[in-house]
Length: 455
Image 1: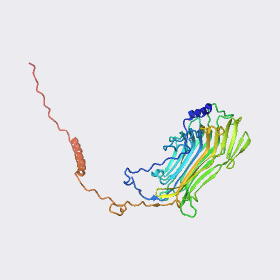
Image 2: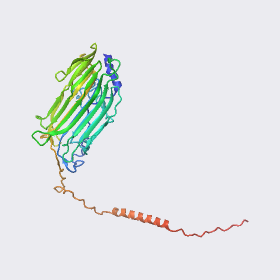
Image 3: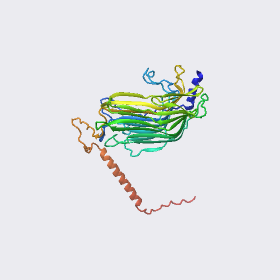
Image 4: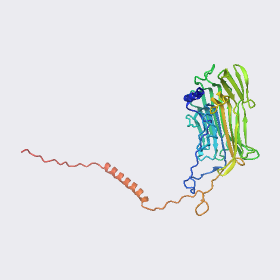
């Protein structure tokens, strides 16, 4: 028992870092006045978008979890942590792509945010911001995407060969988010090895790493507004897609991706027409040329023994998790929904057959193709267009006239005259210095001291 618990602890010492599963960038909270009766800090200026839309999509190429579901979730509310799912001891993610749209963001630059992260990490659910990220935000609009190579992290949990990213955030001055493309993010890699350094207690026959992806592996996240049937308004659609060819696992196991997964959340503002669409992946599994089975929606789990049934790798297409709810806030109401899924879970030394309490579900869990989507829309759909903000009412009633010019200020004290007097005196002083310096030097008589005779 003690020896089995020492294995995940050794893995923690190797990594000390991990990635949250596609955590989205937080938006700036709206600052409120100290006195509730005071007016807001600022008022809208110029034409304002009529659209109300919130959506985000996140996709991760690989997420490695050491000691999954091994530590409780910390919360500020007493007793709530016992009701929430447990966190992994450590997590590390590679190739994260996220696209976020939030028309209700306080800062205009946070209305559309797209990111391509080379890696992310967390310890017991806590994660800092990872460096080397491609980011593009709107407002203002970005006619062209930002693309480039991402820095490859050096870690014993994974090795990458080539990692590229692309982000694009758009916003139209007249139509707001009703523009295509709106928010897209992509990460792709060519060559990946996961868990290339494990403790000595974990034998990996005929292979130095647990999981490797020899071919191109691509993750795409997109948020857009689509046509709403029977209406001129729009619906919010968040989509996460994957593209992969094959995956190789220790022990001569090969997984061919016949059909990659696609996860989509579409919010129309109405519960009856809002929906989650998931195309489950189809994976063919073979070992040393012998076909072991097919992973699909009908057969989501497959156990592959490596060493006399003592070391087992569990392959699983993660089940789809959905959440739906109505909402009211910010002056409008509507419907929101979200879902998470994973293309493939590879669990090393699963503990479900041990029937012992307080154990992690496995020594390590590698998720290939982790997906999350969320979308929210007001009732009736998203309205495209702009309108002038309401005019500020005056104390005497009515509204301030547009483009009213401010009258000149009255002269109330001598401070207004002191400034021109100061500069006038300074100018005259400089002129005097120039005149004195320009005048010729007249000859001066020299007075000789009387001679003193010696006694």
